[in-house]
Image (cartoon, rainbow over all chains, first blue to last red; front, side, top):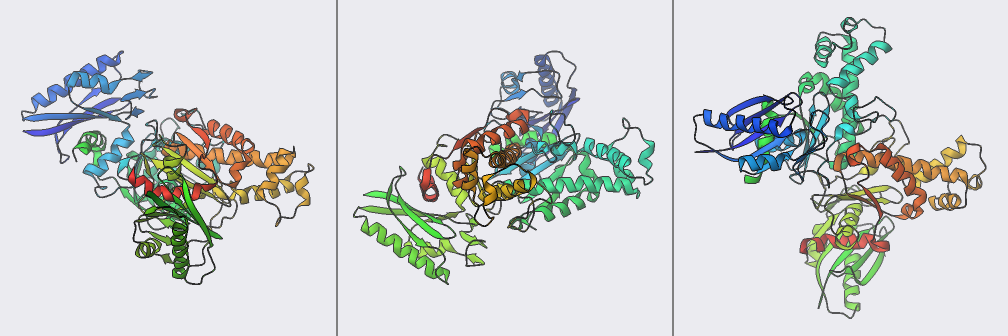
Length: 317
Length: 317
């Protein structure tokens, strides 16, 4: 018999789950669309049906020991999802209680970036670290922070919103209703916005000038930069500088040993990380200089479900 | 017999200590000048002599159970003071080892702001809080952060330098060698610098126009503001706004339940805290709005030694 924890990642479009053993190996997985059901309870029923079926169909002797869930605005303390902008169900969603009632195993919830941070400690590159952070670079910028060996939740369960540090008062409009948040500059969306700003500012030729705003994405900008497009290269220099400045400030608060990156934009690699490293070191207080490693997540494509499952495996350690 | 812990606060001018029991009551105290001896070891000998004498002279049956030390750049992990700008002794000072050898009790070291934060939990207003921070407003701006019930030390023991968050790239020169750090704006020195900036910028009459830079201090600015001096009032509005913006960003990292203030500048009271509160709430991510209390430290004048002694009493709890 093999003990497994289910890791569930609730995304805006799809919800993915996987049966993860103590070594991070997957024994089966599934996907269901997130937003088809009008009632949240119906969505959870479908999800749990799919999990039951996946375990049965595996043909293995799997023993379910718990379920970890990563979800936007997932609150570890209360087990509820609270007013997630990307989900159709509003208000407080008591996901932990409902899943526990149905599945009869411990259920733990946190947000996706916190799950990724814990996953890095249990299954990835942070196995011997007590103080580090994970930055997820996707449509937005998420962060999960580990200090003294534990996730930093804050008094209300919502600590670790580095993407909403205000970098430029009166800066770019953010989806949160404020202006100048880090993620309006440093994210796939931020890269696109910066590209348009640079196209307006400079006269240099660029392949990006042929692409309408609605069609441009960060990957196109990265591809252009890798092909030597000067304007696209400048976009990444600007993005990396902004992130490096922000990380230097966050280091003044938490003093991490390493910062791990994952998500679509992190695939830009040195195009992004060289200016990040340079700006971070330049802006760090002398106490922290040359001490902080910038690393790629070692979790790979399954980071979200591994991280969610780590919520359960962390308690077994 | 009464168990006591010695709390030592090493300042740039004087070193103060006090014999503190489990309830925070002092059973005797002393002061020696910090910088008279050329050798650090000689300073420590005098300090330990003075402690021994104070315990003897008390006439009470006191049992010393440990010594807590708050010092600039004091490193909890290593028990060393590292390159403190305000001390004459440079390099690594192995204070914990040396004091332990002499006194034969457990010795714990941290920086003054961390000590204050722990003191607030053991003896002050944070008794039931697991997530909060303490801001010390003196010549500079120090911070001690508690998360999940423990001090946030970071991987190297130097976390919690909120005073060195860069608020304005290319801003005011800071003693740390960089520019635009929070403490160049929000501290007694920052208030003085802001006063001079405002005197240059505005034409309004002000009693501060009669005072040379070298003689001006933050208390004079506060007194002028309380007397209705418009320019001095504007200085505090600016200072509070800057601090409020910074705290809103720090909240995005640690999500504290409360922020405690102490130090000379904190005595300015609502003159400072009204604009702090307003700017913090205005700049907070919606998740955190109306959740964070801004409070005065309940430790009073003995905050530093109480905090240092709390390093010992915290382990007994």
